[in-house]
Image 1: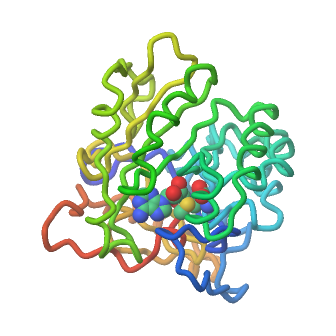
Image 2 (image 1 turned 90 degrees about the horizontal axis):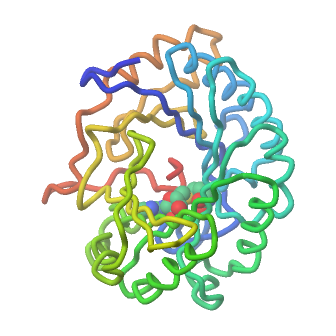
Length: 320
Ligand code: SAM
């Protein structure tokens, strides 16, 4: 379906939970996440209904995210159900990877196509610090398990954070020399708790090109890709730069979001939300609600404007 700007919206990102087994300092408050009442969270049957209705409106790609999608019980069954819905061509997931060792194979068998694994450092002590006690070995083992299960190509999401991982850019780039992975450097966005301190920590993705000037630009096959791609000569993998701040991709944005508490978000950086949970619970037709959410998608975000205020939700309550 086309939105009012004429963009074809084909991609729905679904947060299945706010809960996470890590507490990354720029994403989750130190005291952790308040567990929502069970009835506030969409059931898997309700999520399935939203996917079915979305498919009727032309959505063909679903990303499951969170919080951490793999901490929600029954996630493999959800993947199984939604990946067999007519019109849905791919179901993919963004995860911190820590539970992929246990779940990777079952997810692949259930129909998951690929995973994006979030990893902001390759150093054990830094990982423990930024995630407030996470174990990097869990992620690295998860990554191997995902590769073996065939959840390829694995994409590694690295949020660039000034003073934290700018000295590891080369190490991340070098991972692509003999591994068929995509390392994607993502600019930190002004959201939630980090929003106000954002300018202290922001690092433009241009830094990657300054540090590694021999990266060769390559053309992406996916015209809606939010990343600009590069590679080292002869490398098996590639590098993606995702620049929501320094070069916004609003004019190509083909996505909208569903939060775990049943709100549709047409744009990540706007407070506008459209409730779908009540209609689901009253057994009403949800297609008009989805169609409206798509239609009203804003032309662009305003995060680069001086008086921009970060949105009220935190990233873990929307799902990156
Ligand atoms: N738990 C999963 C994970 O770690 O991938 C999925 C949810 S997490 C919120 C999704 C992604 O959002 C992660 O890659 C995380 O690093 C990223 N993220 C969180 N806050 C961010 C921010 N302010 N700017 C850019 N990316 C952010």
